[in-house]
Amino acid sequence: MSLKFSVLASGSSGNAVYVETEQTRLLVDAGLSAKQIQILFEKAACGEVADIDGILVTHEHSDHIKGLGVLARKFKLPIYANKNTWNAMNGLIGEVATEQKFEFEMESVKTFKDLEVESFGVSHDAAEPMFYVFHHNGRKLALMTDTGYVSDRMKGIIRDSHSLVIESNHDINMLMMGRYPWNIKRRILGDHGHISNEDCGHALADVIGDGTKHIYLAHLSKDNNMKDIARLAVEQTLKTYDISAGEQVILHDTDASQPTKLALV
Ligand SMILES: [Zn+2]
Ligand SMILES: [Zn+2]
Image (tube, rainbow, N blue to C red; front, side, top):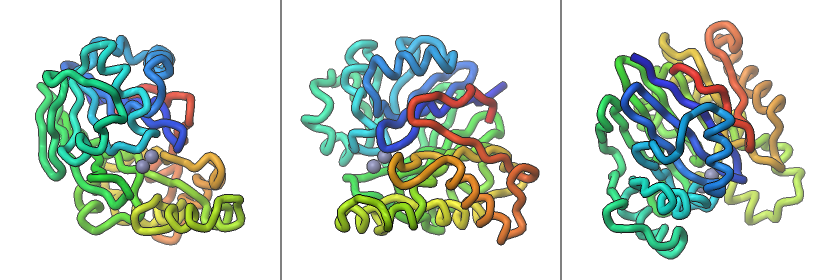
């Protein structure tokens, strides 16, 4: 009776998360080439891509859908996304057969055999971006990246997850001092961009519950962040709330091209 997952890849160059139970196997986003995703499945020992039950889409940015069309066509996989995301993906993923297209509306729950999936909206500059919480046999896994801030509503939904994959996008100083043009910096820092390492720490302090153990820092900016800096910033922020990383909760890295170990939630 287990819920397992692997963050196959995370970051602005491509995102994909694999989730499985005894009866159900899902992919969230396919933001790398189909070939790369197949390699990541192999590396993480996630079995055959052909056997998954479907791909859940969070939003239409290319780092989340780059390989979606090819992968879905190659293995005849169902794709789940909300209506506005489907419209926004029109022309971006090529032809997908009608029988592979499914709607998964924001703020709704879908049951895939023994796995319950809940969708919730985030604040990001896409058509209707949403992320997912997975429930199986009393265990809870939440995925949430690509958001400019974390609202109380979002916190309520992801609160007390046993495992949590959360965005820790940038170090504010690295971003401000970096070479990005101002309009891009403003986009990243804005309410519809991405959350910083400190924002991540503050949000975590509000959502860590008695059951929370594993926290995966995700969607790190390649140019404006580093794993050590992200982990340290989150650790220090949590410390101001008397939450000790390493004891109470364990912080894990994610990588742009290396999957995390297929782990129990
Ligand atoms: Zn995005
Ligand atoms: Zn993204």
